[in-house]
Figure 1 (cartoon, rainbow, N blue to C red):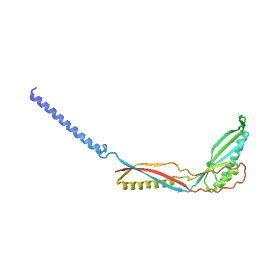
Figure 2 (cartoon, rainbow, N blue to C red; figure 1 turned 45 degrees about the vertical axis):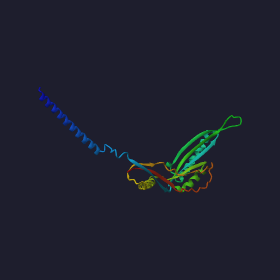
Figure 3 (spheres, helix red, strand yellow; figure 1 turned 180 degrees about the horizontal axis):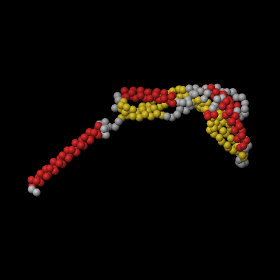
Length: 256
């Protein structure tokens, strides 16, 4: 092989390498352009997105349509059998009595039943068993609130000696919560616009939404204890008032 042939082969190899590098460079450039078009790369000049957060609160007042009350019978006797019979008899009478006033079977629920021994503690330090206490509690849901006082009077006249935790609530709160939510969002949006105007910034879009879902607790009324015998009891006047339904929201905006 002569020198001229070697030169031609070297020249051809260099030309092929140059073509390969050129094609590779063009391909890489096209890939970068496509990546930018697909937002795979962030313009360093933009940096990280800035945000602000604002809060809003919405309140709605609604008249309760449902009540719930705890009714207890506490019985004491020398033996468990005697205490249980006394307690069961009175509670059965109470359940039947409040059903006559419109409380449905499905709205009466036993929430507690306890049997506990009772002791005396004389000066000599030797405790003595004196009997047993049986305590039974039912929760009754009242759907006709005009009968709340009559139900309490009926229960106490039939042997309930503890009546309390009377709560008034809105049975279906979602419609009221939606109204309160809308008020809260509007308040937050108004606050965001005012803040943006004061700071000289521009609101781009909402990037996060948070709602406080803590339940509103209805007011509870303690009604004290009743008697233990079947007697005529005056029905108390029960005022239901209004319940406050509150929704709190937080909006996060991207700004520029």
